[in-house]
Length: 638
Ligand code: 7RM
Image (cartoon, rainbow, N blue to C red; front, side):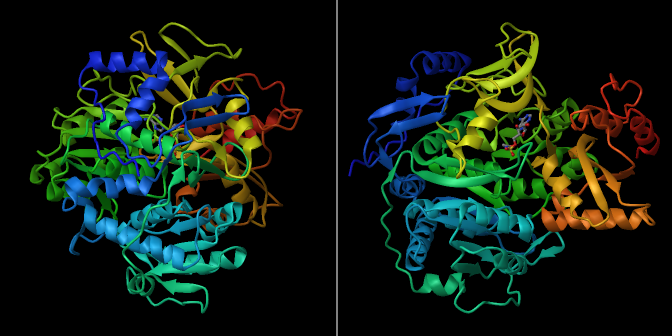
């Protein structure tokens, strides 16, 4: 076995180093990424660093090499940090004990659970669904899947039984890993009950492994459901990681687009590993021994890359927080920072804005002196929230990295490098080495120069990029590589200011971003349409002070609605049942008609303006079949 135990990854420590690395990454990408890859352990080295075309598209990084991500996160760390804490679990209820797992303990648990998976019949290439709360077992399950070469698909525990079933069916999982129940704040979520509703709508699941987290009375279906602890008791702690090929699938993660059902974004092994490790170390300027706290849920890509894989690849201590920012009070994040002496804190702008509403008195009693670097992710951060975060959490001395990326990109693409990049509030600043962003104009041409705005594309592959949509490569091509042939299209609009700084302005498609949660308007429309009184729905986003964007639904109903309040309550319940509570509309307006063009397309631009409350200038409405509906909608606007 050709195992290098080195951890000599270059770290960017000055703007000159950034410029030099950036230049090399463009001019000599193979040398640049081969160099970054050297600090990982490989069973077999690659034949080629990169083979690619953006037409099919086909992208292969480190082709021919063999490695294992779980081995790189765990086995590789044992020689130097077996007794260092890998994961700190902070429970929802602060009165409960926190848990810690050292690298050796985590390694043992993962090896044991990898054997559990094998004993249950799981093998390389199988899809395994993980539907767990924020507990270390979620990370253990992910790492165990990676270890045996099974493809994990984590489903956020806030998704409904229908959403869970859809995901299981789409990628045909044969195993599901879940827990009895959990609390978020004071609310109890009976996870296993949701699973019991979902599984009859699926056909491929053979077994369901249940972790007993809250001692909740649940039904265990004979022959299907198995207790995590029973299986662990009988499993060996010896497990040799599978040698995976670089382009073997690692995980599938579902994400929303502007049309159709959520897409199973597929990431592969070696490129994702190198990119997660490289970006974690550089963006956050991670130093050995530091404690990193990412508040994202493991059900989202941020949880995958910067709560689990990136930190563990760097031998970091990562905090997994089960609770919410406002329980038992709005000082909880800062209590966690204080208690565990967090050095790097990474959260979403929506969380900052919601805490902002409670004032700053609470900071007087918290010691945040351990903090060195702050980060944000998931949505644009407005300047006010940036300054509030800087002043109150960072005490004016911590760089804030505004990190722009997507489920599809696997890791951060545009972001400051902490301690290196000169910051500008609300700007994601510059591309990381290896990332070549371009802005496109309406004619599909690259816009050169500065002080410009356009649609954001990336013109060269980076190791962490998604390779396909599971089971539908044509949809992958169509969605990301057809609007601008030869480019990856992000779906975001972007400005490049006079100094060349990038500022992401938000989605230019029908995807909305609610509290950092990405959701397609079409998905919400489909859910609302299921209501028996609803004929047609149009959903748009509108600016929301805390959530970033709120959800505004226009619905056409059969006949006269007797009780609009009842209808609204039922529609919200419908969306909760079909998708999850986070997708519930904030405003529901009953309308007689929707502004449609002669080709039957809803003119969303008008609906967005009305939802924003900006009804003075709705632009050209002459192409509408019936322009009078606009007036009616305006009158009834909420
Ligand atoms: C990591 C993640 C992706 C979408 C993306 C953007 C928006 C994310 C920022 C941002 C402005 C940021 N993955 N977005 N980060 N917008 N500034 N720093 O969020 O797949 O769930 O969402 O989120 O619109 O396309 S995601």
